[in-house]
Image 1 (tube, one colour):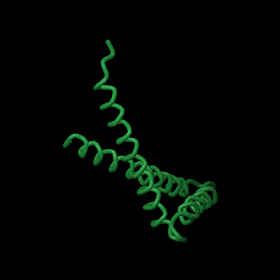
Image 2 (image 1 turned 45 degrees about the vertical axis):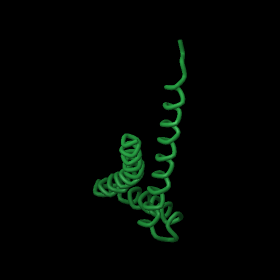
Image 3 (image 1 turned 90 degrees about the horizontal axis):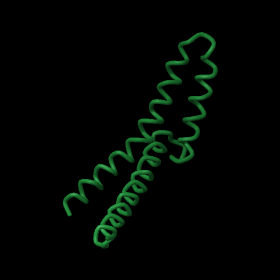
Length: 97
């Protein structure tokens, strides 16, 4: 049973960190691209679009939106890990010979 909790914890952490890191890298990438001459407008507009998208999930606050997306995907990751654990247990008990 201890392995289940460790697996759930790792799935939760990875599922929460994935969208936060991905969106953070996208915002950072477009922030850096803004220093290249001619790309400032594209960088500014794209960053604005990303922050507006996050604000939809956070009642007008992008930071709250990214936390909401992270928690939602965390729950999804936990549920998928539980399904995987259940399937492994049910298939392990079955005799396939």
